[in-house]
Image (tube, rainbow, N blue to C red; front, side, top):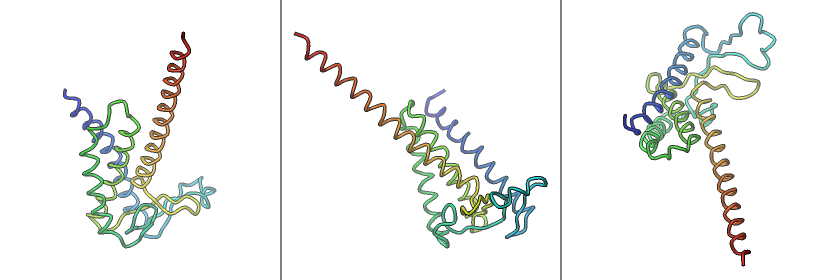
Length: 177
């Protein structure tokens, strides 16, 4: 099988699984908790001040930022998804962090785009302390950014180590009579 096809199968497999999880959890919340309501399993009520499941809508970006920007974020999601699909096969095979980050970001953008297209707003439901309410797609985008930053840090660290080794080798060659 062609490597590009394998890459796309992995990308769409990972993203598809996350999109399915995102849409399923949002559906569960919409079906079982009235808008503005909240839920915690019996026995875990002690978590209430720290974490709970709520039913909320968002017409802005992740974590409730930039409210009423639905059209802008719909267009932006299409652009992001297109860019990821276009650039993914061009990523070097060994750059696993960029591939993982792109898969997570594709899933997040598509998960929230589905909500925007079907209902004009995104269902959010994860409430942790005073942090804005979010969903699986938002978390996927955020984790994707964290993985991307980790990858950049690891690559810079590797390049510095290689440069130090090259400088050391050059110094050794120059020291020989």
